[in-house]
Image 1 (cartoon, rainbow, N blue to C red):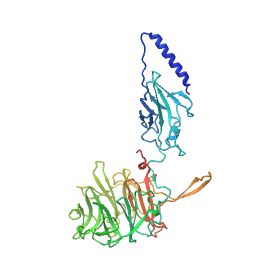
Image 2: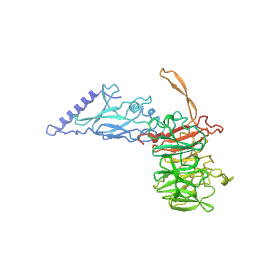
Image 3: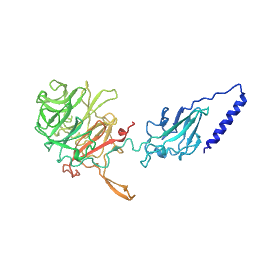
Image 4: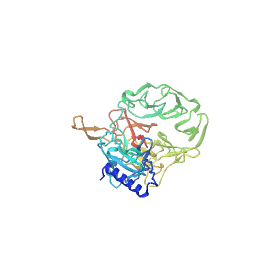
Length: 475
């Protein structure tokens, strides 16, 4: 496959001597001292050409974008293309011998992976560039980066990261505020919270609680973070309440006594629904005092269990999309789909409907999130996600971006004995819940048992999931 390095040196010197003899002593030739690698490339991986970075200062070569999962079965026999003015030698695996590199021979680069399939670190592929003058050399080391996880898979770990964190069942409402997740329950007088910066985040012993004071009810219908404070509405009460810590609340009297529900902040204003006379109207406010009316709220607009996704569209304009439950008195026989309502400043609220069959089915207590560049909706049945690029056409997700399900896996213990391990999930297990997404792209789902068929027996499960690619250090 390769010839010994010694023979290469001899051949090169013989050629140099012959050329010098032919040209005569009066015409000396100066060979280039350039020993730099000018270009490096691997053959295609799944039909894709992945670029490699050459760090001339350190002599390191690596791919910025990791190769797909499973590429180790391709790079175990792959062609390398190297461009240089000299010639190249490679060091053997035992680090004892050099041989000339032949670009027509395939090489095995599996051992150069940063992390090998068995979890151990790999060793770089080393080679040396010889300048034409045979005096100057430069060494390089190649490392190939390969993903060990499916980038588009939603990873929930091996089970809930918290259990029994809230000793009650029923409806939940949660929000992220001051680097904490705060969880409220309709059947509890306490607020439960944990720090997002905690090293053991989410585990049962890391949740704290405090009695809530100042709210007439803990059955919270809406809660928003606006102007560095929390604002909330509660069932059966037209007032708005404010808090600076999520524990102590006071009436925000400037909001008046005609608020139906708060929706979400967008830009520097807060959106909501207020009652004027006998009509509910969309409104916006910058201070809670002056409200700008923006049209009558249609009967089929959700007013219960509102879930909001805030994001910027492709032109950078802030948008919000809302799903939720339609009040019972406003439901009709034609309500067969979960419809997202969209809004941007300067535009009117509108339903994102379609005449096609690609609608999101009617879900109980739906939630919406803008995540990984797409929109997703799911309900309290936890059967599946529905995905959309623009909020109009929805398709059921059937692989990778899924809720975890119960499963048995085979693992090897320290004595190399095979053991069966139970992996817990919550797919197809209905429960009351609340959901938030933190700035590190973790999806948090707080679940409580409610006694309905299929509901979990132990209340207070906390699950945390993340799209694998959003956790990669190199995107």
